[in-house]
Amino acid sequence: MRRWKILCASAVALLMQLVPRLVLAGGEGLDTPEALERKVPLEGLSGINLFFARAYNENLWLYAIYCTVLMAVVGVVIAFGTDIILKAMGMEVEKIEHKE
Amino acid sequence: MDNGILDIYLPIAGIHFNILILLAIGFSVGVLGGFFGVGGAWVVTPALNIFGFNMAYAIGTDLAHIFGKSIVATRKHGKMGNVDVKLGLYSIVGSVLGVEGGARTVMWLTARGIAGPVVRYAYMFLLFGLGIYMFYDYFTKDKRRARHEALEMEGGPAVPAKKKWDLPPMVTFPVSGVTVSLWTVLGVFFFTGWLSGFLGVGGGFIRMPALIYLLGCPTAIAVGTDLFSVVFTGAYGCFTYALKARVEIIAAIVMLVGASIGAQLGVTAVKYIHGYGIRLLFAIMIVLAGCSVTLKQFNLTTAAAYCVMGAALAMCLIIIVLMIRGFNKEKALKAQAAR
Image 1: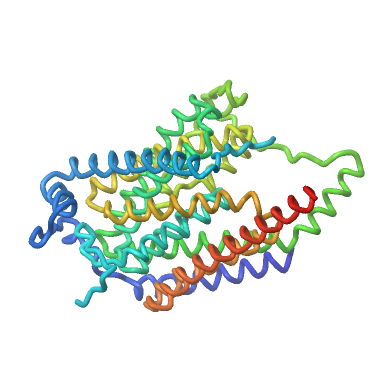
Image 2: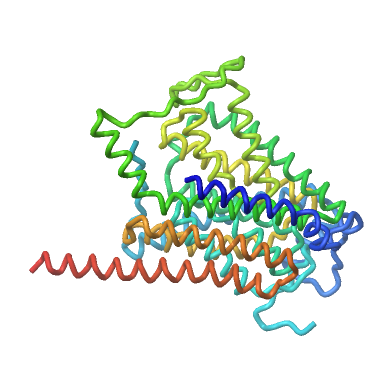
């Protein structure tokens, strides 16, 4: 136990020594304040990519609603879809019981 | 740039990405999540970042995929009946505030160009800390078992006293059968929500033990309420990051499809793989994920990519092989019994 404590404390101390230098060394420099105002170029886009890119450029509220609703719909479709497929394959989906 | 046939263009993130890698990330997380019962989203943010997503996009996209996955998990576990609705409503308030706080922290760091390294250091701290703890837990299990047996021989195991912070106002949760300080409840959900917004994780690995040990919830209710909380945390995380222009929706959907296939395998594997040894593999996986984040921090991106995907896929392969062996063993035993 004592050995583990010493080992952990040493590892944390070593890491703390390295943090400032490494944070500066690892800077991405890509996600800058200018990039926050970025617009998606629409040239060459079609179908679903164009649809999302247009919503993204024109109205972020709309884009956020699309994203949230779409993920919910895809989640529900997958949840019920896999149930149907597994049942058709003869694998009943069991509920996991938790015992106290 | 020469793109392969399996590369898809992700216009929001502005990068080309191999669809197989996206599916593999989702699949690995699905297998790990389904098998170990934790979300496994701590692999997604580092992996997306390693493969070219800027950190804020990686977190936002991960949260969107967590939201979709939480709906699938809620349906699969069928645990909504075990939700303490009153506690769940408090969880929404605390978690939403926390996620917003976490997301704003990331955007603040992004505006200063240091979101990547800061989040990576947070991941290193989390992954190495968790990994070391799990190694410790694994290698001291015999000593703990012996101590537990000795205590039982002396007249029952000693139950550690639950710490209480009775700072008013107090709130009663009849379904869980507990009365706790409002500040403890909001504090737990705010912190786990902040962690979700900051790291792009579900936060269940902290929320679950906190619900059990800090609030005193029964395990079944903690599981149900945690899932309930993840659905809302994920939904709000997806919404707020999309509003901040940091969700690559196509990538989130592809990963969700991969995760759903993987989760079916993971959940099935639980029936056939037993034993404490598998925890050691999980600890190794966590430490390797930490190593990949460290490699990325040192700009060794190719090595980091091989490390994270190699570890995740190797772990999946081990689970699948053990599952097939367990299945064959069970089949042989059944055949033997029938004779």
